[in-house]
Every structure is written in structure tokens, then in C-alpha cells.
Image (cartoon, rainbow, N blue to C red; front, side, top):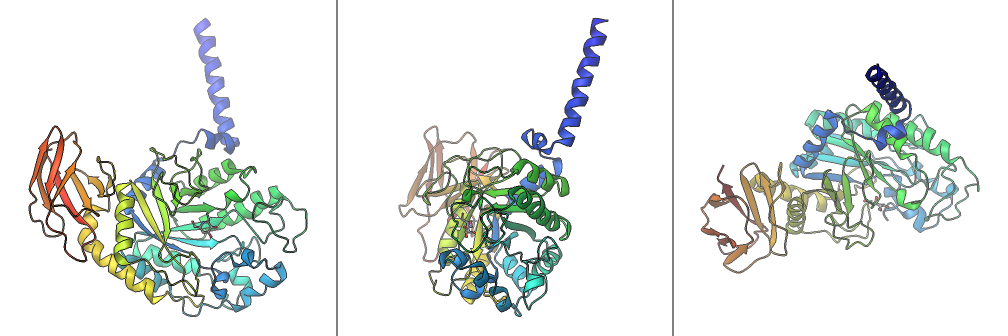
Length: 443
Ligand code: FHN
């Protein structure tokens, strides 16, 4: 009798807990269990390794980056003039997606709206969007999503939580300046109606998407952003969509990827990244191809092809993806300086890609000399900065059966002992960014 009472009490507790989790998304995300589709999407994300970041908006017209509204302390009335000049008649989704593919990139993350709050998509939530306010009148994100689906590229939407335009973004945050907004506003409406409304549009009108890349929470670090509610909404609408927050903090429940801005995981050279590196979710680092995110007419500091390749290899060796940014022209064209570099990286990847795609960070800690990646029974030793003829590496648990160079399969002489592995390197040739060597392990 006592046992029966016990088990019916337990039953009631379980049913109550299930009802609570169902009706209260906040609790659901605190106890977040990624769905099987989400876990699969995380693995695929890690396999992709290289993505194209695109900052493109009405600010591109002014050719001075995506912060121009703030930097010039423009008034709302002034910035409101800008959409009239945005008419990207040269935008061609096929050209953009084909370029990403030619570069060996497997996904695209594009600004659906940046801190100016201007939606680069057809939004019914507000008319502060490309279809309603510009002479272009079309939805480039729809064209891009369709083309990505056609070409097998995953599409992620960058979404700025920070908003310099909407009066309901109130109380305002660290980047506030008096631009003509009233000193009152409805924060809950901003989050629950405006933001979640737009996210619902992005997650229902564009087919399956890779995920949402959030940015801007750092503007009000102590605010209640209703994250649990928003995250639950995203996972409900598309369980496989990954939530990637660029909040520069330790990941929270409900977040699926940890991203680092202009830094390798754990290396806070930028000054705003956390040193904490998650071990249970995928990692990503974002960086720029020149020095700007949005189109900047005065920025010709393009990274060399070798530099981009090295960043990609170092990211992979740190178990991370590289999301590399370009800022297209306001007319929709992509700077030829970006195009030629990306194509060259793609050519290089057609030879070295095996040592990067589908790998995870290798067993040997990254060093100034280079990094390792691993896949199945292979360890790839990426020698990036080592001129001596021999390279000594620390010991690894497995026995190496053979070693050969990635580029021409030529066998590489090595010794393995309890002290470690010593590789005899071929002399470095000019233009060789990565002397990648495969160590084949005994199965
Ligand atoms: O302020 C933005 C910036 O404009 C750009 O979008 C980068 C991309 O990672 N994120 C923000 C700064 O954290």
C-alpha cells in the first residue's frame, strides 16, 4: 500500500514537471536538452570549418562601416533618409553563393539586421525594412536563401539584439546617444513582439536555416533579454537551427555554438572575449578579410591569401570554424580584391581540404610552429612556422604506422618513442603556407 502511494505521488510530480516545462519555456531552456536534429546540426557545423560572413545594409551606401549611424551621432530623421539611396541593382544571389563555394566555404552568415535595426528582409513587424523603404523593394535574403538551398550552402542569419532606431529599445544601453528617440519605451514589447516577431519571420519564411547569430547583448549586459523565451521559440520553430550568441561570455543553456570575435578560442587579444572555452559545444571564430565588417571605402588592408589560409588552419587546429567577413558594395557587387583572394583560398583548399574539413582539433597542443587536426585514424600536422629540418612533437597515445605529406603523398621520415615524435621535414618552398603531414595511426 505504501509503495502504491509512493509511485502515484511520483507520477503526479513527473506529470506536473512535464506540464511546467511545456508551458514555461524559461524552464525548458534552463533544462535545455538539444534535440537529435540539433546535435546532428552541431556535428555538421563542426565539419564545415569555413564560412562566409557578410555585413551588408543601408549603411553600406556611406562607405564607412556599419557603425556610421552611431559614429556620426546622426539623428533618426537624418538616418531615415538613407534607405532611399539603397538600390543594389547589381546584387545577384547566385554570384554571392557561387563565390562562397569557390572559396571552399560551406556556410554563409549574413546580417538580417545590424545595430541600426534596419531589416534587410521583408518584415511585417515594422516598415523599417528593405522592401518598404528602399527603391529596390525586394527581399535579398529570400533570394539568398533560395540560392543557398539550390547550391547546398547553409544560411545563418546575423540578428542584432541592440537597436539604435526602435524607441522601445528602452532603457537604452552603453552605445546610446541622443538621436531623437523619446525617453520612454516598452522593453518587453521590443523583445516579445518586435524581436521575437522578426525571428519568427526569419525562421518560417526562408526554409530550413542554419541558425541565428546574435550580436549586441553587450550593449546592456545586465538587462533581462528574455533569452530563455527567445531561445525556446527558435528551437521550437526549427529544432536544428543553431543559436550562436556573440555576447563574449560563457555560454548559457540553450546556446549551441560558442563564437569568438577576431580571436582564437581562449585568446583574448581583442580585449572583449572571454577566456573560457566550451568543450561540449562547437566553436567558431569570426574575422575580417580587410579590417572592416561593413563596406569601408578607405580600408585597403586586405589580408594576404597565405594569411587567410593560416588563420583557417589555426582555427581548425583549435577545434574551431573560421567565419571570414566581407562587406559588399551598396550596389550588391563584391570588391574584386575580396573575390580574387577568396578564389585563391578555394584553390588551396581543393588540395589541402582533407586536412581541414570534417576534422577536430588534434591531440598535440597548438604552438607557434603550427597545429594539428584529426579525423578517423589520421592526425594532420600543419607546419606553419618552422624552418629547422626536424620538428619534435610531444608523445601521443597511439602508434604511428606511416607518415606522408598531404600535397604529394611523399613519405615522411619519422621516429616515435616514449619521448615523442620527430619528423624530418622537407625544406620549405616559397608560397607554401602549410607543410601539412599526415600521420596514419595503427587501427
Ligand atoms: O558591433 C558589432 C560589429 O559591428 C560587427 O558586427 C561584429 C561582428 O562580430 N560584432 C559586433 C561587435 O561585437
